[in-house]
Image (cartoon, rainbow, N blue to C red):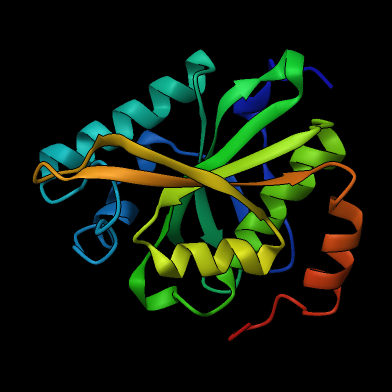
Length: 201
């Protein structure tokens, strides 16, 4: 499948729907984004209305231009937007992309929604986009995210030191993880089929 129409992609499973961010989503995001805990390990933060506008505008522009594909994560049960994630660093010729820029509202953490979103993204990456490699990166200090990636079966590959600046001036070390195409069927069966996407999982 060509990656040219990624902006029209809608992903869904039993727990979540992921579709591109729209200007009409602003009010829904405004209800959940102003929580500093969400942004502790992010390079950028949303603390003001202007910063939310920038987030929305950048997400929409990047998606329409093909730089990234930024999704709103919608909880099937409530119908509410609960966060965002994205495909980025798109390398179609190499069949490689990154899943990242991911966050969920603090009130839905540890409910399985973030895990369900990752499953939808991984299924589409491997089954439809025919990726050979899906990669992730996070701050080395973000132990929760690192534990979550390992629970998916992602393999830690190494640390890139002094990768970029964080708000406040700290230089961030990032750690890379990946899942390869030939690993995914067994990982999906082991990590997801045996652990259904239920609340608290």
